[in-house]
Structures are given as C-alpha cells and as structure tokens.
Length: 172
Image 1 (cartoon, rainbow, N blue to C red):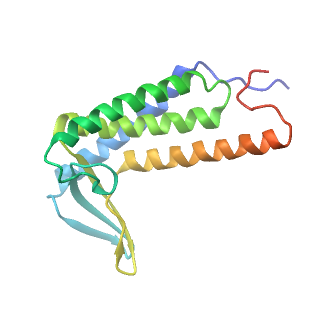
Image 2 (spheres, one colour; image 1 turned 90 degrees about the vertical axis):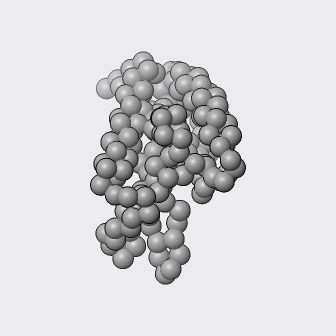
C-alpha cells in the first residue's frame, strides 16, 4: 500500500487558524464574563482568572513602560516569518509541520491581543501546594505543545541519524 503523502504545506495554516480562533474566542468569553483579577475556582488545582499581561511569558518586561509592546510585535512578526519558511520546507514531516502550525497559531493569537488591546489576555491558572504557575491562555498552550513536538522531532531525527536511517522529512 502506498504511503499517504501530505498535501501542500499551506494546508497546515488551517491548523494555525483553528488555534488562533480558539484562542481569541476563549479570551473574548473570559473577558466578557470576568473582571480583571477575578478568580473562579474550578478544581483544587485549576482556576479561571482574568489577567492582562503587557509583557511576555511569565510577565517578562511587563513593567517596562510600553515600548515592550512594539518590541514583542516585531519579534512575533519575525518569528512568524521564520516559522512560515520552516513550514514550507518541512516536506513530508507531518509532526514537524503540525508543531510549527501550533506555534504559529499561538503566536498569531497573542499578536492580535498585543495589536488590538496592548496586552495579552491570560485566564488559565494551575496551582499545587500553594505554588501558582503564572496565568496563561490557549495560545500559550499551543506554543508550548508545538515547541515540545519540535524538540521531540529533533530527538527522533538524531536517533534515526545514529541508526543510519534517512531523515524522515527527505522526499522518497
């Protein structure tokens, strides 16, 4: 039976669009239902909150005075261009293409917030034994899963290279 070939690279942009749409829809819902700082306990380890983050991950540069907004917009645009180029070159490597699409969708969801609101809306909070992880959102989750998958793909490629097998993304 012949191996199924993936469609054109740009089809992966649909996954990016789904991630960005889910991110923006959940942020809109939380923003309409909660006030900034509200905490709604869901389970003993999971809360829904509304937090506006003008910085990056872990509120990096959140208090920098405003210039960081445009810095993060520029970084996101540059990274998105690199991701698009990598996606075009991902060949038949579906894992890598899916990972890149997840990262791109998450980046675009947070970019929309920065451009339209001046901050990123975060609302997922996990905690245990009195320790709280910084609030995050669907976009952050997609970026994290995408990066983990990119790393996993790299480990798989390194193992295949050590075993003398061809690179998976190389055409047959």
